[in-house]
Amino acid sequence: MGLLWGITLLWAFSFSLIGVYLAGQVDAYLAVASRMALALLVFLPFWRPLPWRQALVLMATGAIEIGIMYLFLYKSYQYLTVAELLLFTIFTPLYVSLFADLFARRWPKHLWAPALLAVAGAAVIRWTELSEDYWKGFALIQAANACFAFGQVWYRHQSKSTSLTHRARFAWFFLGALLVTALASALLADWQKLPVTPVQQGVLLWLGVVASGLGYLGWSYGSTLVSAQQLAVMNNMLIPAGIVVNVVIWQGQVDWLRLGLGSVCMAGALWLCRRQSS
Image 1 (spheres, rainbow, N blue to C red):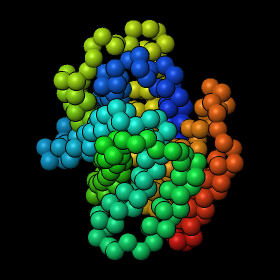
Image 2 (spheres, helix red, strand yellow; image 1 turned 45 degrees about the vertical axis):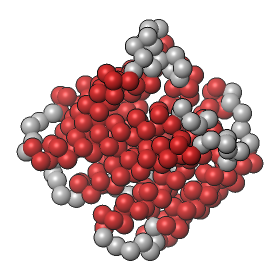
Image 3 (tube, helix red, strand yellow; image 1 turned 180 degrees about the vertical axis):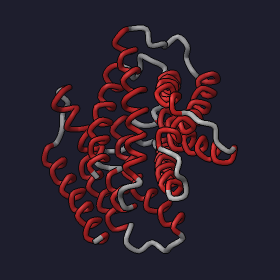
Image 4 (tube, helix red, strand yellow; image 1 turned 90 degrees about the vertical axis):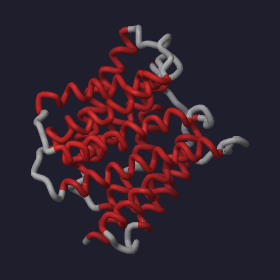
């Protein structure tokens, strides 16, 4: 769990960095493709040839969990406010629980209670009035949530049957993600919005090498060390962590009562996970 907490804190900074220095200034497709390219460079020294089936599975995992997920996520910005987008990401734990049950070929029994409690906690923190026309955005963000959840569970499932190191796997993982995002950039990007300032380039370097490269490696490895219940709950811990970082460093506004109540619900979900796993 300690590793997942560390990555959660790391990613909490990413939301504010993107919002302050990149959003609306650098094309989203170019930003995502740049992140994937930089992350791939981190793992190229560990690349090794694999049987084509295994290589394709790893590439497909990266393409779905990160590549396609980001495409759905950025498309949803056309229909949702930031508050609505954050609200709709709270359903990710439910998708993690669902895919964990499907891969284990079991009937849901214990996974859903902590996942629902985590969703309730995040809803308390992020609930806001919804705009009149949000169904397209809602569908897009649920597709993004499902892709991210599926990739996490699929990676855990693969880890049970391979001795390949995580570092070697992630060279193929980010190659798949880069192929998807590079194709989207070629077709959809606004090439007038390049990262031209040193600050923008520095933020992208941090996001690509640290947040994406080391972050997803740590998160995927950490996901193999915890139960599916704990993984589901940790997917929503980023919401209170991101809010706290934004308030402390960038002087954002927050309803501390709602943040406290929501965090208590999430802590209860983690306690429930531990109780069911013991």
